[in-house]
Length: 333
Image 1: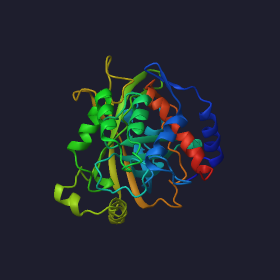
Image 2: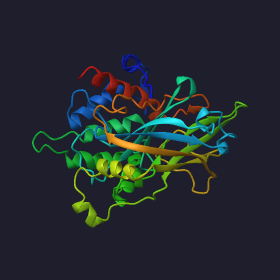
Image 3: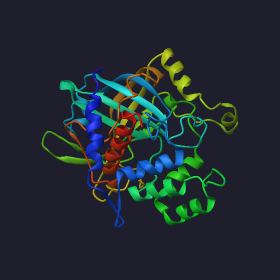
């Protein structure tokens, strides 16, 4: 599969440094400010991602269905196979993070559409994000800075963060109440943001999506958490693909007037209309070093025709922040 030239991503990173700052709560948060804060928590691993550093690559295809046609003209849903490069990962910048940690898992996808157009999705295995705006995410990273005396975050700073940032509560409670998945193949992944699907009549519909595993959602038991080991996820995915293709159904949720559009911490009502609009098939998986997913930026604002972003401040901020991180690792920093 053809990949976007690395020079394009480097340019994106340089442009991001001059991009408009995200406005939240009368404060300005710069992309490089957030990336620097992440480095302060986890340190720097030159040439590697700052966040979701630990991951695995996979390849496969996506086949969309005609059920999406009333909502979008995107070629993703033509009914023809679309090549996909995928990356599965753990959140954070620690390359040795244990796979048993009650932290976020990610699934990022790059679709190659006819004519060479690319579409990216960067999803999480929680139904919501842990920040309504970039300031909350920055404040979390600042609260997590290790105390020089202990090498660990200051409990009082974390307590103050939780008290002053209620938008972080829903995701934190979800992670605390749900053990990690037994495999990347046994987890659902949510787009977390609201997007716009635009059809051939140029009509826009607010949507959210998630990918539901056909293998079923399975979580580690409390006993399994103690014995699973620190690095089981990658091999579990590789072994599963060696047995046959792994599939997820793409489920689209249709929004209505009044549904939260610009806040990824707020869920939509369960009774919203849901439509199956395609199937993702992963044919093989492999370690990320030297594999096709390793150099990809997975910018969530890299969108093909027929799908558009909302003004969600976190969604808008992710793109320049990703670009800053990418520019650093491209430069071996």
